[in-house]
Length: 16
Image (cartoon, rainbow, N blue to C red):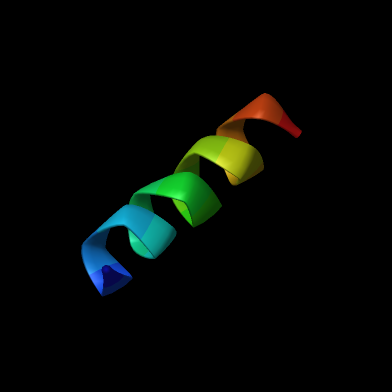
């Protein structure tokens, strides 16, 4: 699911 991947990318950016 691209939506999940997009969310994961955003979350990773915030966590980083």
